[in-house]
Amino acid sequence: MTAGLPGPPSPLGPRARIAVLVAAVLLLAAGSVGYALHAETRAGGQQAGADASFTLGGPALYFRDTATGRVAHQPRAATPGAGTTVARTTGGPACDRFHAAGGTALCLRAKPGVLPRTYAIVLDRRLREVRRITVPGIPTRARVSASGRMLAWTVFATGDSYATTAFSTRTAVLDLRTGYLIKSMEEIPLTIDGVRYHAPDLNYWGMTFARDDNRFYATVSTKGRTYLVAGDMKHWSAKALRPNAECPSLSPDNTRIAFKKKVSDDPSAPWRLYVLDLRTMRETALAETRSVDDQAAWLDDSTVAYALPGAGGGRRSDIWSVPADGTGAARKVVAGGSSPVAVG
Image (tube, rainbow, N blue to C red; front, side, top):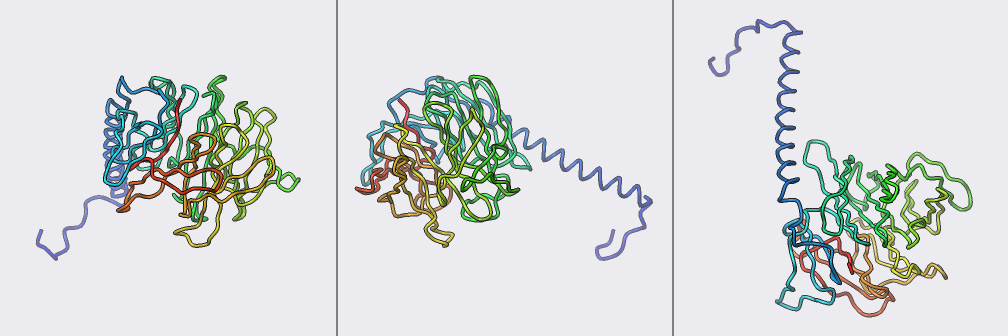
């Protein structure tokens, strides 16, 4: 056919042309799915699993190595100095979010494909897979209770940043003892200011469990506001404790909660880390003055750790720690890491 000249009329009628178009779309979709399945097979194979020698030991600081996407660990007290790096043990599973406690680990891994999905993978002490649940959304938060019994994870259903209002989350809870899975915490009866609260825009994220595996704390958002809520799994109820508290993390002694508080409308730096005393409800600003968009992890009863973007931008991040009483200064504990958790 000569360029620029119309071709001969199609011998196909309108219905036939539509059928051809649909077939072509399906063929392209099949190709995309085939590629996604191929990528998933590669990610779910030996490359994504932990090496046989890599287990949950301790005491050590476990984290996601942002260079490889796999879990690594290093001694808890190690701190990288100027121009030096701390030796780390590599070979853990490939995860986008990771947490572990009580001989159980939770690995959230983004599933390749056209629609965003997440694998919530339960691992034993040897980091062997014992259960896998596929959920729609992008992985963002993971927590395991101190006993290893209760697991919670949060995914973004839409959007990918807590700094905007255009997002929706879904938080699920798995009880390993009973095998019962709560697919969404949005159905739990909620009380705000002493009144039973109903709203279609409820979002839960960032759960953290008490030592009894029954009480929990989480963030709930509705109508543009966030609240710290305390919940009871056995009685299936939750109540708001205070406004403007996100991504709670309960201390090992169960007396305080580290959280991020919105202190600015600047979307590039909206939050600051605080610790809340649950007995007095007094909050303390921590020495870290940079904006932290993370669910902090307690390294012990006096120190919290969190991830901040690393130098050079991109997906690299570093892990920092700071005293939980508002004194001292932040210090870098892992270069090129995220999802910190103290094990052992």
